Image (cartoon, rainbow, N blue to C red; front, side, top):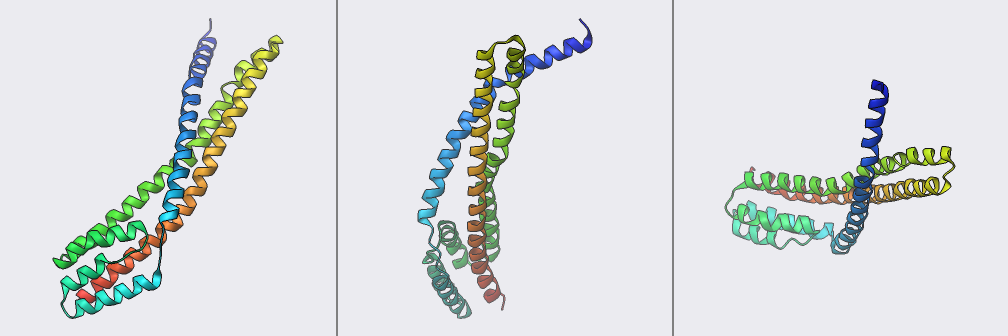
Length: 209
């Protein structure tokens, strides 16, 4: 056996051995995608952005800070009710504001930005890895399918082609859902970060006056 034949056989064995893990990963990816859809719907129903209310609270915080009433500003910050991440940031920032620890509020806003990026990573991975696994699931069965075709074994040909088409569809479906969720969530988090930055800028500009 020549070196070329040996390497070719090794590559074929390796390729065929990947089929089961690829199908398993695609099945897991499918369930993860459905869970992400459920999580997305849950997040959508809880979103509540009221710009006029946020502006009113920030003006009140500004007024309290100008009067050196850090306790009152802290209580006003705790009363902010917007989208979940903005509300959570406001409640976590309130004790720092009462303690006049402004750099900690800035640091907390950066932590929330990282938290949003992590949430986007989940759907980004889904949208990226879906086509990769789908393509692998398409190409791997084509070898046995062609062998079956050359041998006149139509059953083997049909079975492998069914696997190839199924893995392609599942990979593209997961990728498409992940891409849509990522784009919508990215817009949501841009809005949330804009609101958080508005709160932080209000506090910093008033405090440093």
